[in-house]
Length: 400
Image (cartoon, rainbow, N blue to C red; front, side, top):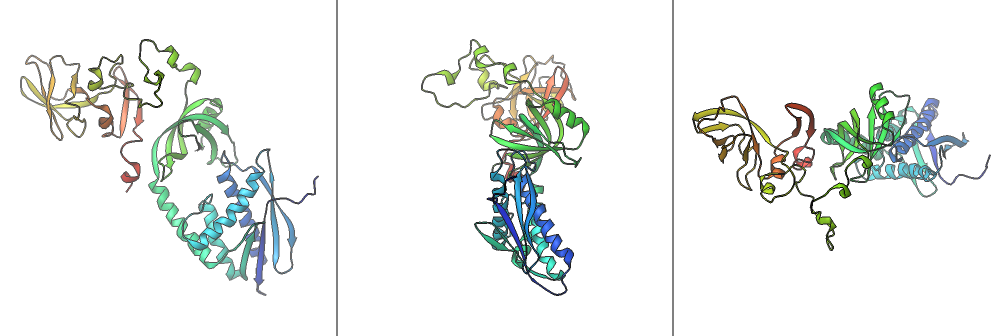
């Protein structure tokens, strides 16, 4: 075994012990600091799991009592994670000396430990300090007070930054832990380049995750999102679906008879447009895609043989590109939209009656979709899925 001095470590010093000091309080400090480093390591690691084995070294019982926590990587390629954890702990304590917000790589558990240090004064310990090779910090009263404030702020922020939805990506790792309520796997979101941590607690989800190893998946559940970017950072998983691989998805080379703007010389970026769903404005351009998105309303009245009113007005369908069209009713046309209603002209012999469903083809799908919280995927007359419209409006404004 190598006897080389470790390059990364965290030294704990307990100063000014009173004669009535509680020995258990000293052990509490050492164990709490160990828990803090483990929690930080989980936050910092790519897959949300511990990859460092910690041990106490150079323990001294003389005043000041001291002990050094040394980390040993469990696997190759994570040696730097030891330094990251030690530095993040000291940096975080220094951060809490200045302000009452959550430091990078801290969570409620780590903040709770920082707040806990001050309570040990009642057990005969007046001062605790921490040091790495680069810097040192003390667990002052200010640190513990700010840690308490930061916990409350974090609780409020987490309630605000949660929403229900789905994320897609490649399932990269699966960690089976002893804690049945916190078994994580991670997916790689190729759209944002983010690693998203996913937590589950049922055997069914565990088996689905195992079967989906290294496959593209769609994960549904409660999302925790970054308040700055709006991107999901973790998911409390309710369901997981294995998707087709990229090799099974039609590629551009398979598409014939369609002009692809991105293939034109000199074009460096494009707006993908609305071809996947289409609207009546695009339909006029003779583009070889079918319309696949409609707004479903209910006929509320038939005041005249040649007219009806339905409950799908401005609040359900925009008209900045003109009135929507009526789907599947020959000779019918939208006359105008009011706030709540669509007034529709009909052939006098139409059998449309009060209570019937009627569909409108929007003239501009982008702002129309933005008016709704979910889309219903329909096959024939059957609803086969419900898709949350996660990008509707500005999420940070809607949470206020």
